[in-house]
Length: 145
Image 1 (cartoon, rainbow, N blue to C red):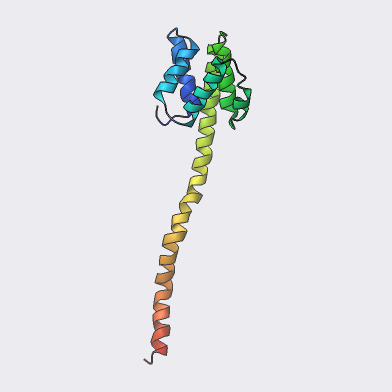
Image 2: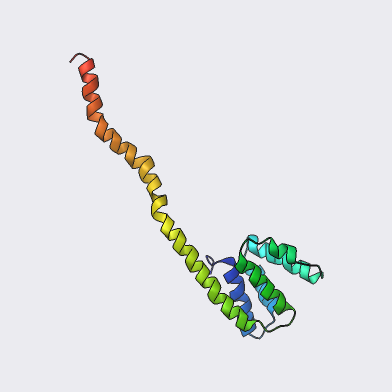
């Protein structure tokens, strides 16, 4: 689960904790301990704001991804004691579909990206093969024979 999307990893940790009968907070702490990076640091900041009783909406709105915002709002509802397992299951399906869509767009761009080495390395070599004999004859004719 190392190359999984960070929101999906958080969702799965929390969902697994709920399935074990643990609270949402323990799933959040398991995620924070297990993963490193930008998103776990955001979760630590967000959780700190919530524990201090401050408003975390500014931090939520700074997230560019809608799925991350919805997930954090759902986690906040879970921390307040609401039952969120069904909503987590539905969000899991949506996040997986979003990951598949993102992979599809990246795979669709891949052939065009792979043309760059072709243009940079193989095309100049082809031009050298094509114009090499022509230039050799040209210089040979100017060289006097």
